[in-house]
Image (cartoon, rainbow, N blue to C red; front, side, top):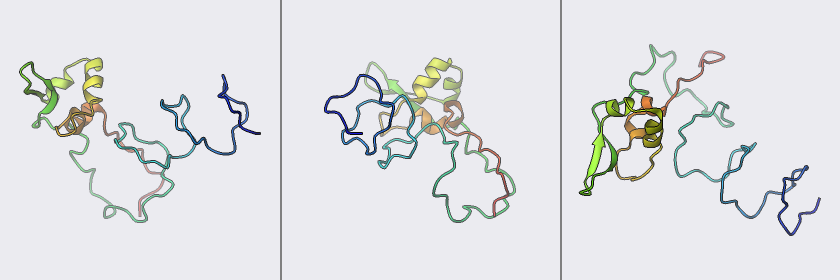
Length: 144
């Protein structure tokens, strides 16, 4: 199948043999089948459910561990995060307890903030409220 010179109105029934040379400006409606060759500049908020193609060679901890590591998926209620600038230009900061008491719309909006990059954001300190970490699925077999 030979590529056309003009973009089509609807998707083709047969996939092309070579990837496109021109990158699109918006995300696709359907996830890709293979990982991208270009690394993302921002971390993902949703963890993959698919095992890595290149898992680590050895365990990262001594086996077996006594108990789950505490504190990795908890809100840090002692650290304020940047919320917005006040009318006088000074930053307005809030605790995770404030965010937890807000509705889902506000929580999602505040947790999705990625700027300013030089300040502590809600996603950096309110891990549980922002859903940044999720419990790992149980292992099929013991770690060795």
